[in-house]
Length: 263
Length: 258
Ligand code: HEM
Ligand code: SF4
Ligand code: FES
Image (cartoon, rainbow over all chains, first blue to last red; front, side):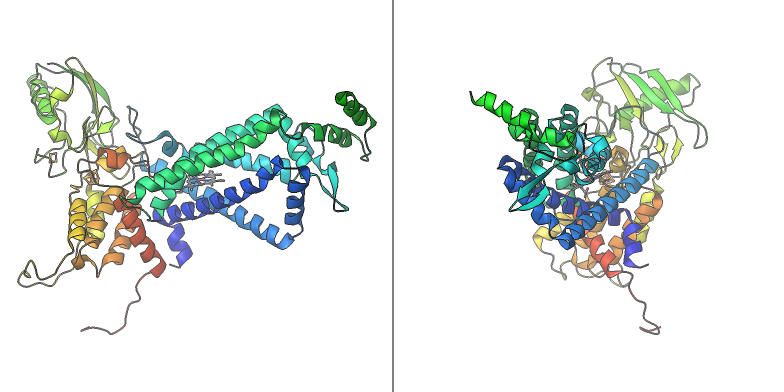
């Protein structure tokens, strides 16, 4: 058997795949968070960052395809392993089982499935910019000028997008379940790859908790701050007008409103 | 003391089973759980009913024959002991105790609380041994073993092959048992020549038997009567990973004495 078959046809081989792809996705999550946290700076910061990414199509598409492959492999091994596991106990116990197992470790598949549906939504929301899913309008109309160039206004898109209460709520639910997934998964990853002994295991568990909490906080403060109108709400008032107009024009109403506030 | 037992009764593999409730006669708290079942069975026999079938042998926690899932936990309420070392004093007078067999596809039920754990034997046959030359036994101290390795190998060798790890795991995974066996031999100098081949063969046999995979829930370690550590699963994962990358050994034509 060649190596691909050997890995795919073995329970442990699939565990290595889960762990490696999960680890790669975790590394991406860190980078993605650092990128997103720039929304707390001036609009030019994150818009410049987004423009920088878009200006490197090879890098961008390489990363996108790599991530997609990781997600696909992670899900494919998760689902096949879950089938294997279900088949291994055809008759359930009458008493609650899974003695001594944490809730997070028992619900890896359900939390994963919600995360997967979030990923689909998130891509439709902010990557494919499907107007139907965001509850606001056509985000592709949001543009701004950066160093004399017309670029997509990612800042306004994030603020407008996450000001919608149910969207914000879904983002937060997904983050909570991602936290659950990672609080167990990050530690399990080391075990699956064989990095564990009695000295390192407590440290690994500590790392898994700390990293998953850090990601939870980092990713949650963005929608929360935006939904509470702590970030960019003044900036997007004007953009709402742009969204409705066919050709974005400076909005007189916005200028008037600003004048009122200044009094 | 007296207890109420809710016990799984099933005539044979092909019939369907169900729980039956039995009131125990007056018990002594210092009876073991198995002695309690003996007493209940005596009562059943005198009433002309079929006694409850359950597995047991040494009754001192060393053979791995006793099983039972007692109130949802294999080997009963305590940590680090087998069912045969569980005493009735651990229960209260009037308790209802639910007793189920170990449940796993790879442990098909034979009758009542007895299941067939030969899948473990087949895993052992696949690689849980070392190949030695015949002849006189070698001198015990001719191969030096580093003390930490000897200790760790001893910890792994504690596994009595009871299958509680499988019974407890939500995935009915046998990883803890297989890891203990692989590590026990893989830590010793005598086990080195076949170390990776052994890991590959035993894990592949485990998969073939229909056990689930590991989700690192830790239930196995929590119920193991010998407190085998999950660390050994990591060790198995390392050895199997090496074996996987190396692939099957190439056979040499016309080599050796052949
Ligand atoms: C950003 C996304 C994700 C990250 C960072 C991530 C990370 C991880 C990590 C590190 C593990 C531990 C691997 C191991 O046990 O060795 C894991 C396990 C798991 N993941 Fe994910 N995951 C993600 C998304 C998903 C999705 C979308 C699913 C959907 C089905 C999923 C399902 C699972 C399951 C079922 C397990 C446990 C597998 C098992 O142990 O049997 N994950 N994940
Ligand atoms: S690892 Fe523990 S629970 Fe599993 S078979 Fe060995 S002794 Fe029993
Ligand atoms: S009967 Fe031998 S270990 Fe319990």
